[in-house]
Length: 491
Image 1 (cartoon, rainbow, N blue to C red):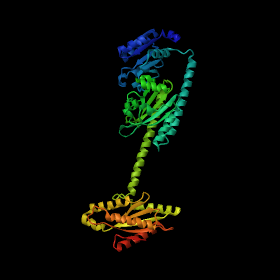
Image 2 (cartoon, helix red, strand yellow):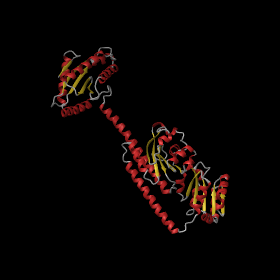
Image 3 (cartoon, rainbow, N blue to C red):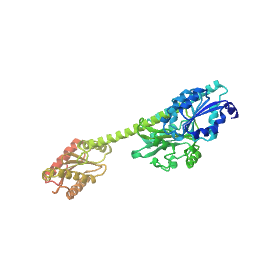
């Protein structure tokens, strides 16, 4: 350290921050490390200082600025000082600026608040010159190659995880598991925005026994957590931008910092999830590290791409579930009679075909009942169509309430219905028919006149097809109607 400071004593530096207090603090902390130190309060002044002399270190202190637009010239300063050391000091809540500034050139950074010892060490490291430049460059290339291999491995694991879009919870778990493959990651989590702004913890992978639900004291409605304004993943969703916490104590919450340190967490990175730029946040992914890492531009870019992959997977999964729901509704609409809620004729005949095959395969009894609501057309004429429709709907409800879940009621035409009664022989079918006939006759229906039904029943023969049994049960129904209605006739 002394050797480094000895070399630094002949160094020239430029410090930029608009606040006189910040400039004075840097002078008091690191001024003796420079032979010449220009303290500038504007981008123009910093640019003039860089143009006047060869500068060994440019320190850009972004504290005090709330919008990146206020620092439009900072990127130009980084580009002007290309190739020479640049140290950026950035507030915790504005760490999303770091990847944007890296587009202008390479620099080292520290996240504020920074203790004096940490700042002095960062300045000394930036000013230090390697003894063997060739070996230093070779090591940098090797480190960069390993970094890219690690990123590629995580990317491949994540792509495999995103294949399971049928089950969003299982996919989220696989995503967290894939992200844990990055070196130093000890805990990963995925937070997903549900309906009405309900942010939920849907998955986590822990290598350090940390339970994020216990830490946040909840699994859902996370944006109502007291840690909303300080914990990186919650802050990432609330602000809609990346958040990097390079030391738990910088969160400003001693209890949170102690909990994370107890689980060997030294750094937290959180990235928001959104379907496309500018769209609402879908949630966030969070990675907790057991070491301090100064990320490169490539690493920031890769993490951003990973967040886009996860957003795409969540979006596809949500879209598939919505499509499945719509298809289910369409399928239901295509098989249900709109007026009565019973199955329609096509669905009823398909169900009968399937049950005949099943009864034949397992030697099970199967019965079919057919009934017609008596004098229904005359009631329509007398009371009007709305009353007649209400009556028909009420009769269907009475029948459905008295059937088992394995049975089916289908409206075949007009006021005629079919019942497929599974595991039912002729005797049981007769008892069911009598129960339905009595229930309808005694019911308080919307029509003013008494409503009754005629029923025909048939047990499906061992080698009988649906067409044959329907003909037999229809013939039985017609006999019941000719005999005076409100009767039951076996086929």
